[in-house]
Length: 342
Figure 1 (cartoon, rainbow, N blue to C red):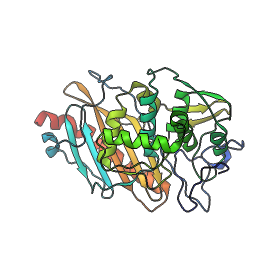
Figure 2: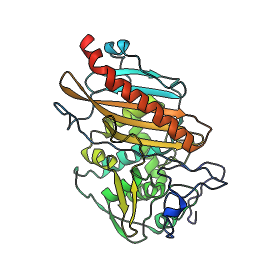
Figure 3: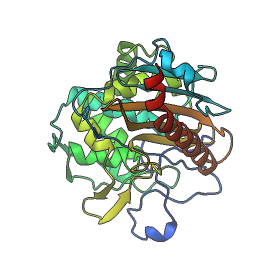
């Protein structure tokens, strides 16, 4: 990395949306291939309010990950992952349970959910508004060329809308864009990280510590319950919902388009949310889906962390997607009947 922000050599890089080298012959390439020295990361996701029946479009899910398990959960037989940790809750119904020891673990690019949350708290914007104008600095542009982490191409001195930068951070999980937004908001990344930790404390995320804005740092740690709490808060913002639901985004000035790499998006009612993986973090997935229960479209939120930790990011990501998909399909299949029994 040619700028002043040093990345420890032994730490695996984080980010998402890995692409083959053939896709990027331009110097401003993004999502670089795996190198022999560094393990890259995959992960992204998104959601927006949607549903059938009486849609719950406006408000965030009225669930608290720390609340008691809903009575109907006792009649559900969810396929909880055998490793790591997981938590699931349903809007208007409550928690469906938590599995695994809720000890803080690295969360890789899931970190960017808090980065986006803090940016939008400080710079609110309408659901479809472009937001403020941000000028990309030389550091962010130089980091576009990194061969040790997932990045998104930005050009020094070019003006970008706040929305486009948030999309480039959340869809292909551009680490350099996360750091650019942090500097724009707080002047320096350290000051922005302090904001992230204050926000976490305000949300009651007692087991969470942020040490960076992108997820590169393995010292950024959290739990499934805490990340579910954050997802609930973040989804109150219509702009956040639209941004993380973006299916694809094109980097201005480069013509390079990235698709959202959340493999579950658009299937089985899935409308988000964010994935991230690295060797120490394993595969991580924060997901959102909808299911009609007694004529009301309910939002279901879930978090799966630390799947296949210690393997490759690809293997971890696949395991997280598999675990998330199993929970999603089971909840959607059994929740309506369980609600009727209750």
